[in-house]
Image 1 (cartoon, rainbow, N blue to C red):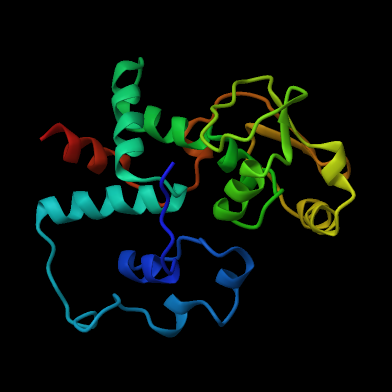
Image 2 (cartoon, helix red, strand yellow):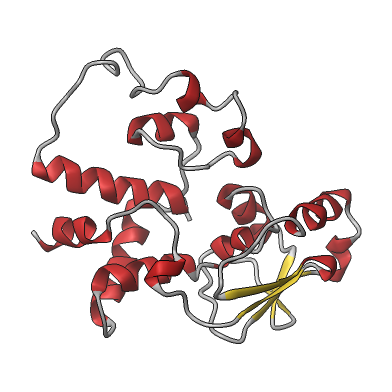
Length: 208
């Protein structure tokens, strides 16, 4: 699956907010948007008024960049969300939150979604005891996500276990940091998804 490989700090500056794409660095003074709080490029410091279409487009791009997925895959998620019962925008965010790489990040087993994606791709995680190396795998309530036994002894995962012990996962997840294991308690509700996205704007964009 294709992915963005350019400078990620540029994406935060383009959207005008921290997207927390580089993990711990985003919380330090080295964060690019803290030092240069304007859009990248030659005309980045110029003030431009966005059109209605531009506002909706920026919201969609923001969602794509937060979850690290490309346009074609994002469109497929939207089409799936439309077919499900309930509010389309909330269905869309719920699908994105259920991605395995996002769940690994939410559990505290990675410092960013990009790192979580890489760890999943390298086969470090199991779902219900079976190795899963597909970042877009959608978890279900009751699923248990765990670090593989062979990976637990590595210094990287020992460090992540210590970090996870100090992080609080969202209410729809349960984590056992000491054993590098987590469980999906339920599907997330909108108030449990703390991403700065106005999903109704994305629905309006695709409904045109």
